[in-house]
Amino acid sequence: MLKICCYLLLLNLLGLQLKANPGLKVRISQKGLEYAKEVGLEILKQNMEKEQFPDLTGYEKFGLGNVKYNISRIRVTAVEFPSASISFIPGTGIKLVIGNVSLTIDMNWNIRTWMFKDTGRSTVYISKIFVTAIFSTPLDNMGHTLISLTSCRTTSGDIDIKLNGKSGFLHNFFIKYLKKPIHRSLATNSCPNIRSGIQLIDKDLQSLNVLMPIDDLVEVDYSLNSLPAVSRPHIDLDLKGIVYPGGNYIAPPFVAAPFIVPDQSDSMLYLAFSEYFFQTSSFAYYTAGAFNITISEEICSYFNISTEIFGSIIPEVAQYSVMPYPVMLKLMATETPIISLQQDSFTLEIQGSMEVFAVLPDSTTQLLFTMNIAANTSISVNIFDQKLMGSLCLNRLQYSLTHSNVGFFEISLLENILSYILQTEVIPSANAKLSKGFPLPNLANVTLTRPHITIVQGFLLISTDVHYKH
Image (cartoon, rainbow, N blue to C red; front, side, top):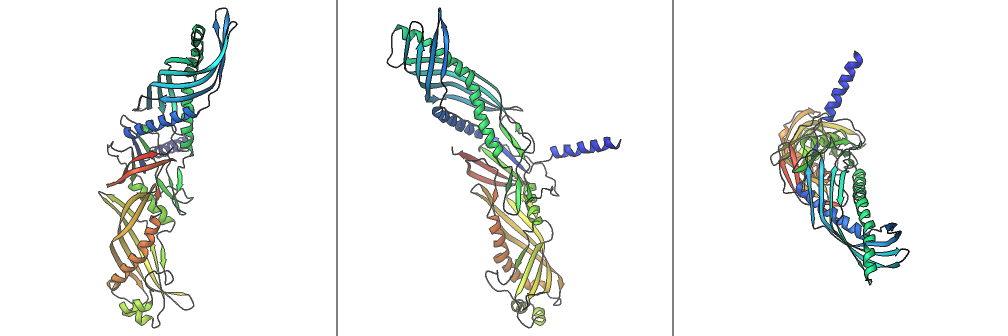
């Protein structure tokens, strides 16, 4: 009975994991699919014109004998795709239909029979080729999405062969024996060639890093959370979108809330980062100690902070420390900073403490007083070099005295100097880290073009087109 209970509990936990809401949703629209089709056909055309095709050798029955043939030095000189369409098949995958494909091919030929033999160069014109292919999007065990060719059908069209510099009844008669192997080659090789191209795409997808370092402190998991969801107007990919402290993959103490990407089709690609994604970032940096900062005389950029400066503002400090000593400030977050995404608003609330020390001549420190600090900041975001960049701005600062070795004093006396220190030391230091940016999930040779950022309740949406450089 105990084993059954444990088994049911395990199934329940597994179900919760499989149903976990994503931290990042990626949507590819019909516009994005159309662009992928155009890029794919152009790559296919270039590859066909560069490809070295194997020779075709064999024989065809002719009366009482055989027509032996050899076709060599086959080269595609022109490819045209006048009609091609691509669409989503809800719940299944993607359908590609290419119609009226035409090819121009140059080749050497050699024909031998018991009564006739000749060689030469010819130009082959093939038209009215139709290809229908259906692709599915399975998931591998590493969290990569794959592309699999589930069905493929081709019909070869008309073939017209011009024998360069050759004419006459016998040459024209034997042309049909050259057409047959070309027909067979088209019928047997078209779908395998498409499958080979898909395997190359799969190789690129599998090489995509789903676990990406952001900096030397944290990394982000962009693996798929579930199978891609294909509907008529788009395909949605739910990514885990979790930021971890480097090498520490313990689940953060938050639950991702569900959210819905708005129905839009003007852009090729949509990236929706949930509040959960940014909250796990905050937790990872908090765990790594990134919100702790020490400000001392050696690193202070704008002025040397000392007991003399504090004593001029707070008489109790002047009485406590007659000799002027350098001052060291230790700021630390006391809990995970809270991220909030509201309409056109991205805020970060930090609860922390600040310890103020006097640095004595022997390099030891003496605590003067400790304060609680609550800072409200706004984050402005933009995209540069395929990264999501951020910049902090201090909105509001609240503080209270929690402990003092110099006696009680009015904490409001420190308002101006504390605000100045935060604005000139802490905020610039945080912005320097934020300027390194969050790497966006991306494929090699793909760049975002004209990205637009919208902040709504619960998530940040990037709407963008893409450009592929082959």
